[in-house]
View 1: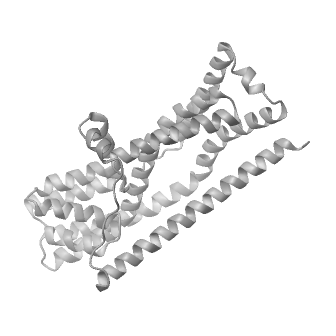
View 2 (view 1 turned 135 degrees about the vertical axis):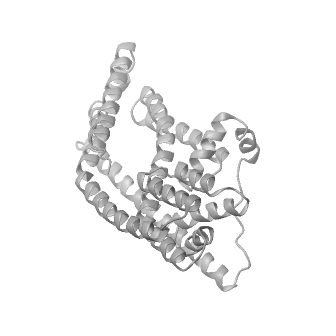
Length: 313
């Protein structure tokens, strides 16, 4: 028991590694199942795919009538997650309670309150991260998308038909987003509104340029094929530039995460070396204020590093 801090850190790292492996295995299994269902549905071995049963239907119905529910629904729609606002709210509340009890038991009850407050921010940050991840994946498919649109329009197809063809040929997320645009156009929505909603869901400079090109070509005509060909070359160059910038800034992003994790590691070592030290430290108002200021400084440092490492390409 003399090496209790090292044993605690080792068990924590092993738990994190096992959690990452479990998430990876679950994600790969789910992807394989979805691919198998799609393949069987295309070959006619199964008639249709029944969506999963929704949970917390009554709560979801009430949330959709509130501003919070509408804002949450809009964010979830931009992420592509198979969640309803009611499910998301319930999962976030359950996560906050879990953070409070787990962190409070490991460190001190006051740290459980701080973890719950951080979890409130983390729930919204998770949706923003998923939206950014989906946007980046869509941007990566833009050169292929413009190439398909250019070939279709060069063959004499209308822009609406070209979008439907691109939705069938491209993988998700581009295929899913274009199918949504095609469905909106089929319901009578204008090209400007349908593409404008797409640009709002996945905001990026590249997509705005593409949407502007398609809208102008649908209004005034012109050499849309030539414009799409030139845009394809430009997007290919920007894709390579973005990849280089991401690689160069990867170390900075790791540093931004490592600094607060080191602080938590030191707290674990202090509590393991001197049991009850964190309870004494947060037992008074002065200690709670000092701890809150320390966590706030960690958060400010993380945000500042993230802001300084953000490069607009």
